[in-house]
Image (cartoon, rainbow, N blue to C red; front, side, top):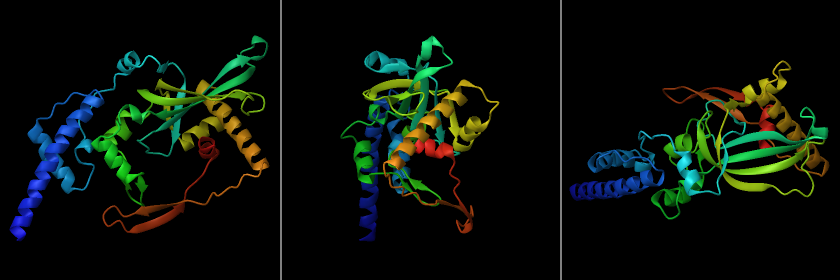
Length: 289
């Protein structure tokens, strides 16, 4: 009986791997990447992936070529080209799946004086995963089953495969990426949204100028000698975030913030070695707001 069970298990794995190979071929076509693996090689890698309990074939570390954003612009004329817009992301150190970025530019000035902005346009740019994750596909079914990325002390269980979240869609500095962007108008004097001006939503292409950590962004904002355009953008975004927060608190907003801790684990045994408090800076609160 055990022999038959093992036989059936192996057969099921081979069938599953073959199906995954076909789905992976479709996945590569969907993201406009060349398919360069022979089906047998894909099947072997799929079996290994299934046995390891990972994402299967959609998580294979294939040699992806850069996404051709010009192709998407040609096929989607409604997608706005914001590659010349100054954009940056602010995340924890070591973050590879950069899914959001910020921008701020002055679009109106007092008496035409460009040193006296009247109105800021703040942009929030979210990685456009939907351009690659199609409904009713194997990847969509698995993502729906997982529901969310689960973070543990020393690892995480991803909702989507790493080639998608850490490469194709990650808003890395100096790299063109597809986004779903929202633009808000803020009064430069009060730091609050301009009354009667609703946010504008659009699909876009951006090219982030920098992928900053919270500490790097905070140091740029705090350094009085840093007069760079990016540092000024961060200061303006932070001022608007502080004004929004002050208005919320004045209106009776409830704060449910709780302290976060970080664990240092032994690399071999995973036993806890130390515990420390997670440092929250104004740059963290700026992004949250």
